[in-house]
Length: 255
Image 1 (cartoon, rainbow, N blue to C red):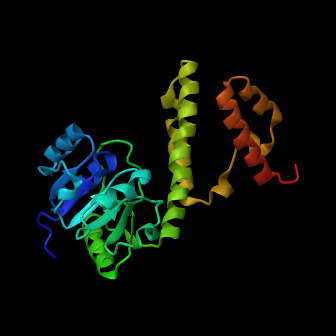
Image 2: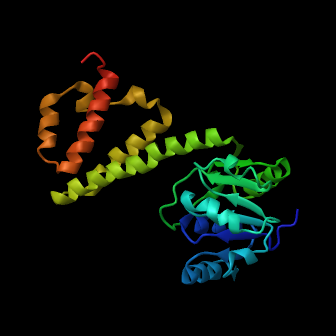
């Protein structure tokens, strides 16, 4: 399979940046970049020494990777020439939405890309799917070049992985945002929580989370919970109470 001048990126966000870098580092050049924002498209195209395409209908690369928000994927794909293979990067959008087009696939890296720091793509699990067996094999080949963890899954399985990832990354990070704000508000040292954060992550990797839960909610320590609530703003109180009640019900179902 020849890969020279075969890959285009649609989108200019972090996922396009990371995926593009993974391909380039693995010896697959980026041929074209398209994005709605001209300046961002030109900037990303320059990073990859690629052509900046101003009209999505003029894309010519064999594989077009669509790296945009889920709400935009269907509209974007409908504008891409039908002779090209389209591969989108969503964790949640089912491939049955494209049953009228036989060359659509998915390459979903199970990782967070909230920054543009270099990442080791080789270790990132990549979940793939396609509505055509030949295209699935080609996507598997491409994914295997950039990662050693390539797995064929169906749309429902991919959605469940994505759902779990939202709980584990997006929601945990948001809770971390609360913790950071509380520390900053009281002019304390955020780095003092570093070992706790590292230990929490390690524990999650090697244990069933249910077996390692600690804290005042699990103990039903009402006095400590009341003291905590005194130091929270209204939004923080709502989230704290919801999480505390959920923990209580799980570990003390009979009250």
